[in-house]
Image (cartoon, rainbow, N blue to C red; front, top):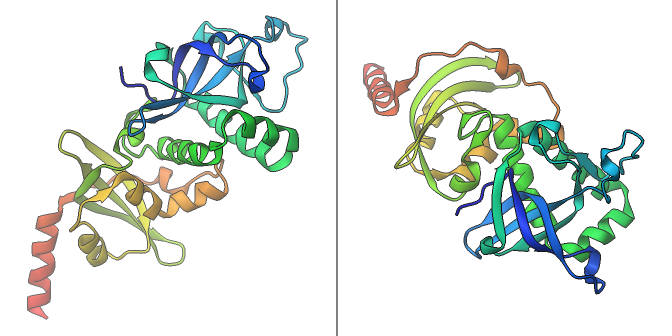
Length: 265
């Protein structure tokens, strides 16, 4: 089975902190990243603190994120505790909502910047955590921007991060700020088609040149001005969201128009 970011899974043997001789036990967790190349799934552990998290008096630690009630699992997600597992060690349970994933991302960032004990703990659990969480953070930005999404909680960025994507349609929405332009574009792979709102300093002629080549999902996301904005402030409200959609035209048709205009000059 292919696992996706945000899947809740049951891990057959999830090690305790720093492998101090305690036998690993079955534990629920949340998929943070699926590495198809190395056949590893990175899972962040869920703990009930011996069922104490069910009590209203439970004092949640700064690195813990509560599991939403609708999931039908009690406990907290420990952002300092994740490991890589073979997919065969996992069993899929259900998916978790974007808001909880966003909280996980922000909680990790806050603690990695402010709490030394947190950093020591996660270094012991997963030495390459920064690399994995950078990928997770990129996916959270993609989800917030509805980049490569077909629904609020179904996003394909993780699968298409390194796959070639073609811009096939463009429509100019607005211009604002210091030379920024907003476009509605269509992104196509061999199997899927996605609508997306793209912000850039590229004029339409430059956008047409940019669309000549297929580009990876990661490349397109990181070239969007909104990616830089949310990387610095994930909670930032974006002006682009309030703009009306426009009719898009095929790139080939726009290029033909451009050629005719140049011939008339």
